[in-house]
Image (cartoon, rainbow, N blue to C red; front, side, top):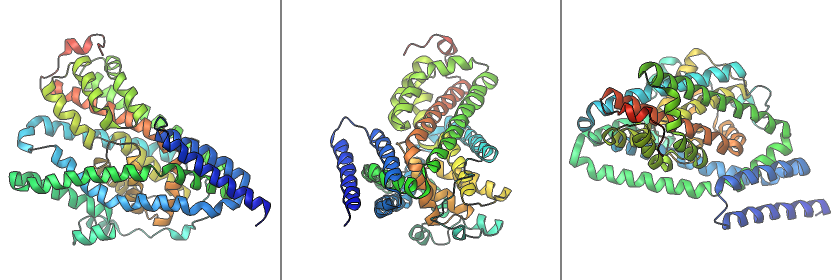
Length: 434
C-alpha cells in the first residue's frame, strides 16, 4: 500500500468518524449533517479523483435501503391517508370540496413544474457515463400503459414493485375499508399502525443519509467533476421559481379573484406557518402552527380548519408534485430521452397519485423518484444514479416544496370556509395576531 493510499484511507476514516461524531451530538440536526457531508464529499472527490470509486458502495447501500422502503411506504401511507378522511358521509360537502380543490391545485402544480423543466432544460449538459443510454427501457403502447395500472394480481404487484398498480390497489383497498365501517376498523388500525412503523424505519434509514451523501457526492465529483454538482444549482433555482409562481399565481389568485379577499393579507396571516414549514421541511410537524394561523389570523372556523388541514397534510402535496414533475423532465434530459405528449400525461397521472401518498416528513419525496422515473423508461440503475445526484441538495428543495404544501393547505381551508359560510372575514382582514 502506497503512502497516497494510506493518506486516502485515513482521510475517509476521518470523515466517517466526523459524521458519526456529528450524529452523536443531539444538537446537530440531520440536514446540517447532510450539508456537511455534501461539502466534504466535493472536497474529497476533487482531491482524490477516481480513487473514491472504492467507497461508492456506501452510497449504493443507502440507495438500496431507500428502494427497499418504497413499496411498503406507498401502500401503508396511501391507505392510512384515505382512512384519515373518516366516513365520507360524515365529511359531506366539506370533504368533497377540499379534495376537489386539492386535486385541482396539484394538477396546476404539475403543469408548472413540467413547463419550467421543458423551457429551462436543467438536465442538459449533465453526462452520467456510469450508466449508458442503452439502459432506457422502451415505452409500452399508450393503451397498455393505462391498462397496466390495474393489477391483475395485487400480491404480485407488491412483490414486483409495480408502483402504479400498487397505488391504484391501495386507493381501492382504503376505500373498501372506509365503506366497511366498524367491520373494517381492525384492518384499518393495523395498516395505520404499519404506516407509522414504516415512517420510523424511514427515519432510521435517513440517519444514514450523511454517509450515503458523502460517498455519492465524492464519487460524482471525483469521476465526473465538480461541474456536475454546480449544474445542479440550475435545478434548485427552477424548483424555487416554480414554487414562488405556484404560490403567488394559484393560491394568491384563488384568494383574490375567486374569494374576492386580499391575497397579501392571506400570506401575512400564514407567515409563521411558512417559516416553520421551511425550517422543519415537514408539513405534519407544521400542522399545529398552520391550524393556529388559519383559525386566529384568517378567521376560518375550527369545524372547517380541523377537518381540512389534517386532510391537506396527508393528500395535498402541490410542492411535491411540482418537484417530481421537474425532476422527471430533468432525468429525461440527463439520459437523452425524448418525451412525447403521452409521456407528460403519464408523468402527470403518476405524480398526482404518488404525491397523495407522500408522508409529511422531511425528504419523503426522495422515496417516490423510483415511482415516477420508470414511467418514462428510466431503468432502476439510472434511477439510483439520479437519486444520488439529487440527494445532496434534496433538503434545500424539500424546504421550498414543504412551504408550498403548507400554503396550499391554508388556501384551501380559507376557500372551503368561505364556501361553507364558516369564514369570519372581519378577522381575515385584521392584522395578524399570532
